[in-house]
Length: 251
Image 1 (cartoon, rainbow, N blue to C red):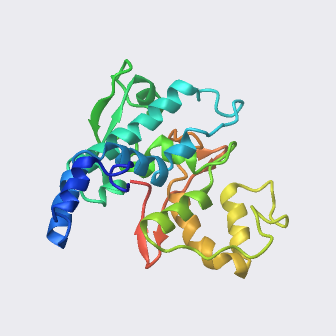
Image 2 (image 1 turned 60 degrees about the horizontal axis):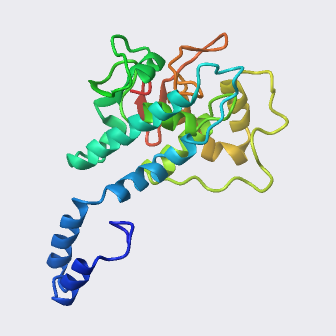
């Protein structure tokens, strides 16, 4: 079920009956063969782990993101599918989830990313970093899935990285806490509002790490387009990972 997303075939049951699965080496050999035909599982893994299911449902506010349409959405999803499939098929390092030095774009997605000289519906493999991108965390699909309808969410982005990549799940928020507290100045910039949020000791322990990662990706808006400013505010993407590891920007 896990590798093929279906019940065992007659051929696989015959191999089990013949004793091919009675030893760890036998299981490893059969599993390796099954993985050569595990496209459905690979697709499911990308859809769930890399948030493609959520990206397929995002509904950005049209007045703020009029360039977003279904053609762009499908191009965003296909980019991540193609990259993940290549990482799997070529047995690349798991680190390439965040460090892949290539991606796939068609004309629609290239225009969204600000990449020139690519036209048409066919996807082309390009080398990175360019357009300020490298790895899946700079894919528009993932960036849109970790945003709100009207703005980015540094908290969602940072929380996903901590939980899914660094295995540092932040504790649950205190009861009754959802979104930014009322005491936070809603007219302040997003960075300033989150800084006010972290001033509460009950919030700081988790947000100090989530927010740093999230702001490292803040140069990508809620539909994954690159920007240098949020309104009139210059975005400062530099930060520090848990353990004191500094970074300058998303790449």
